[in-house]
Image (cartoon, rainbow over all chains, first blue to last red; front, side):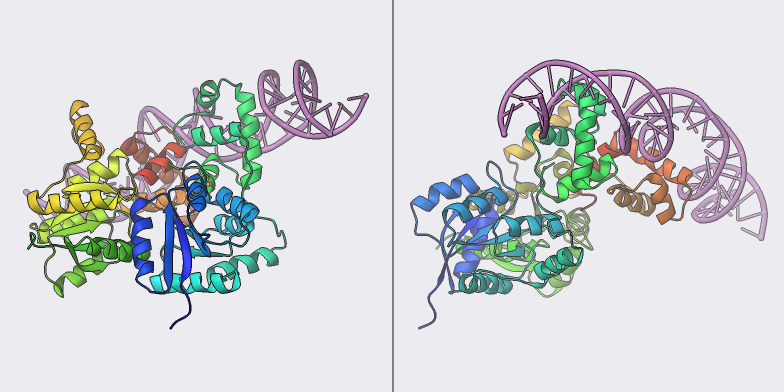
Length: 217
Length: 217
DNA sequence: TTGAAAAAAGCTGTTTTTACCCTATGCAAA
DNA sequence: TTTGCATAGGGTAAAAACAGCTTTTTTCAA
């Protein structure tokens, strides 16, 4: 008899990816997929009807309740559940952001299945799984000694709305009209966001926001 | 005995997605996955060593040889093979673009497995599979009677390089330096791309390029 | 091979939009 | 009261956008 299977859940808004991954992992005979969910809110519902998983594979970009928020909720309400972030993005900010939210590891969707299985087993056994991808970011984060850099950036509703409208062919004046605000107010939002994102141009802002999965296009 | 299985191949640069999907589809008992590939070039190699598939599931964004190019190659060299585009993107341009390149259908990765299986069976039987997503775009394309709008936009190497550098915090002057060209020449590229993409600002250009999967960030 | 045509690269402007200052008001919470 | 905030303003400099034109390079057929 082998070691007992690891019970997991998969939270991701791409149905095909979720279901395909579930089959793939089940076939490894080392992992048991208890359930899967479309987003954080869906996961919370399904947690009630299922045994508590050892590990939850968590996407970042999801409608309604995203990976950051869901991970924070889990650490608040079920701290014994390990979260393994699973994302397409290899930028600093989402990685550091998910780890800060409470994820114990971070894997790319570009990974091989065998590596993902190791990561799941690793995180189930030790509550964390540090691969090269993550350790590099962590190291760089320390070496740069602005340790809390690259954190998820807190935006209020208007800033977020503005950020979305920024991802377009609209001028700031047109954006101001659409938000029923003075162009000067818009200019304040712009200034604030440039500082938060450490950029110097609207294009830089848009690219950063997309890389951090704060907005979708 | 049922109808014979449909032989397919999967071309996608995300290993986990590809393998997971292969397992998922195999389990349906109606589909047989002959092989999978990382990108178009990889697919061409593997085509030699395998039976010709009935249907190829094709991602759009891939390194080395993308979905558009690969589909065109297939239609040129193996016109009897049906291509079903499988992408995250529901914008007009990638959809129309893949169809124009020769794909017989277009499915979202957000689809349910059962729908994907129907699409594969449909396209194997009839060489095309038109769902609501696609028919809407086609209809709109006809109604707007600029029928060849939303086609993939042809860019030369310098324009593409410029476009990539545009997706950054760099000024045009800095981009000119990096490309060892005069800022005036860069201005010509900008002008040309604005016309091709029908935009009025660098931000609009960047967003369009991303939506059309001409560049990645 | 040559020279006409086309494409690519470069230049001079002007106008509009962005980016970056610093200040001020109203309002609500501490 | 004070603090913090969202809002709004004026002014300036830089960058981006737009237009019209010249030179260089490439291409290809006579």
